[in-house]
Image 1 (cartoon, rainbow, N blue to C red):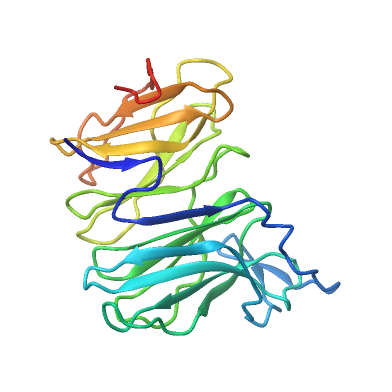
Image 2: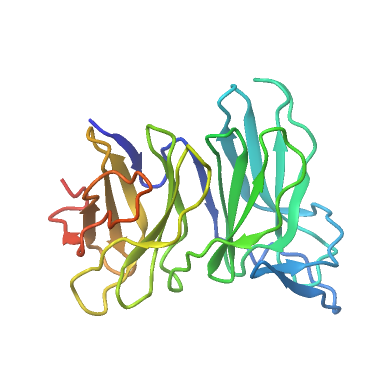
Amino acid sequence: MGRAFRRVTRAAVALAVACAGALAAAPAAPAAQAAATVGACSMDTAAQGIATAPSGGPVEVPRADGRTDQFQVFYDATATQGLPFVWHRGQNAPGGPYGAWERVSSGTVGPKASFVTATENAAGGLEVFWLDHGGFCHSVQGAAGGPWSAPEDFGLQPSPYHGFLVLFKRSNGTLIAMASSGKPDRSMESRTQLSSDGVWRPVAAMGKVPEDIVGLGQPSTVTELPDRRLKVTAREWNRDRYWQITEAAPDDGMPRGWWPAQWQLCATSRCD
């Protein structure tokens, strides 16, 4: 049996999607605006960093040393755009109390959906991703803690309503991020970070569904096979059909194609 990430709920990474009622819970925004863009990510530089109201539940990230960190999306009554922000807190010792919530950055989350996912990388640092106007922003904290890096556009941007970003950690510590794609030559895209250097490789195509006007949602399952290749399944974003694709070879960072040209239609929702 391979290692599996089922229905975007099981893996060595943490994932949370909080969509329902996100806007309804938002405090009224002041009339003044203080919008900015840093690293292609939307910022609200006038917001004072006050966690006023949560949007969805906390995302838990287990650490290699036994501690747990949490990420949460909070609205801020001082925000000028009416959008929430990502906050973080962590344990100082395994099983111990959590520290105070601290805002990751003034990068805004949304609109229309609050989404955040995070993981511990091979170096022991934290990496967090959030939805930003249909794309994904990314920030990193070093293994010793301290400030977060400035938000940067992560380079994956699915078509509207085609799902979010999914992270999977291979058995050798390599991370892979995947999201559906609206580009004409591909149905999904990925980026890989090798455990040896912690550098995210450029965006790579993950094959094309061989039917016109068919778009995929986010990966439904990701499974690492015994030979370390990944098998990915995904549902059509607006139809109850499932597709699958399996790596031609495990990604070791060398510049070559990892994924077949086409996805295969599954006979059942389990793709077995």
